Amino acid sequence: MKMGTACVTGASSGIGSAFAEALAREGYHLILTGRREDPLRLLADKLPVPCEVFLGDLREPSICARLSSRLRECADLRMVIHNAGYGHDASFLETPVQALREMGELHVQCATELTRVGAEVMGTGGALILVSSLAAFTPAPGPAMYTATKAFQVALGTALQADLADQGVRLQVLCPGFTHTGFHDRLDWDAERRKNRGLVRWMRAEEVVRRSLRRLHRRSPWAHPVYVPGWSNRLLLLLVRLTPRRLYLALISRMRF
Ligand SMILES: NC(=O)c1ccc[n+]([C@@H]2O[C@H](COP(=O)([O-])OP(=O)(O)OC[C@H]3O[C@@H](n4cnc5c(N)ncnc54)[C@H](OP(=O)(O)O)[C@@H]3O)[C@@H](O)[C@H]2O)c1
Image 1 (spheres, rainbow, N blue to C red):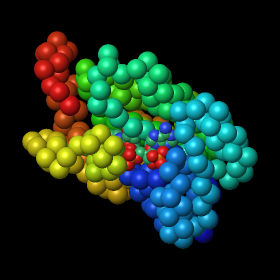
Image 2 (image 1 turned 90 degrees about the vertical axis):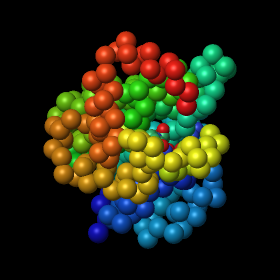
Image 3 (image 1 turned 180 degrees about the vertical axis):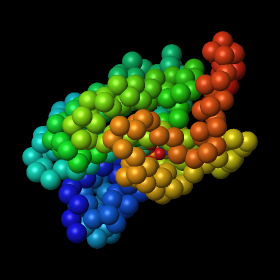
């Protein structure tokens, strides 16, 4: 049975690709976005539901606007998952202003626009997921822009929750911890850096997605929108919240990611 149409940004690998597979199993028709055509078309061909491929760099305001227009035309839009995102290894002061601006375009501007358009188009019965990160709660000097833009998504979702619930739209701000995807391939992390250590437990993308969708379907639209999958991630978050701010800043300034 067709459940309506879902749009997943950043579906060419990792968490986005796992969302696409899970939503296809639920019967959604899909709009899949990314810049890399080959993996997107491979995924679209493999899935047992109609899939539309939308190619483009969502850091470009005109491309994000084109995707918004496409969503406005979609009569049975039921879910929007803004998952496209990436990290960086260079420090804030080493990163060119243009690169900082581009990350802001994807994680802040495009997230805002798709949330606004998705909520307007879907109305009652719709669902929005913003894929943020556990890093939103751990501002750090290395990936400063990444942690700050992901914190924006948490703040936006938290602020909007009541308005969207009034409209019958469910909202989740998904905050995964370390997850095995292309994210750390792009940062050239070797196997040693991707090992479980203490409370740092790496998850598989499929597991993150399974938990996210289960939570989305079970909770009322009025439930708190921020969701951190995995007990170790939730424990880490609790420890961060319990740590006095001064001590946190002293500790985090010594860490290098
Ligand atoms: N992996 C982790 O440990 C982790 C932890 C917490 C949160 N997250 C978040 O999870 C989300 C998904 O990342 P992932 O871990 O699944 O990594 P991934 O495998 O690298 O996937 C990232 C996706 O985003 C798309 N994307 C990146 N930049 C884009 C751009 N400028 N325009 C359009 N699409 C773009 C990529 O597609 P193309 O390359 O084809 O454009 C790709 O499909 C991100 O928002 C990330 O911040 C990841």
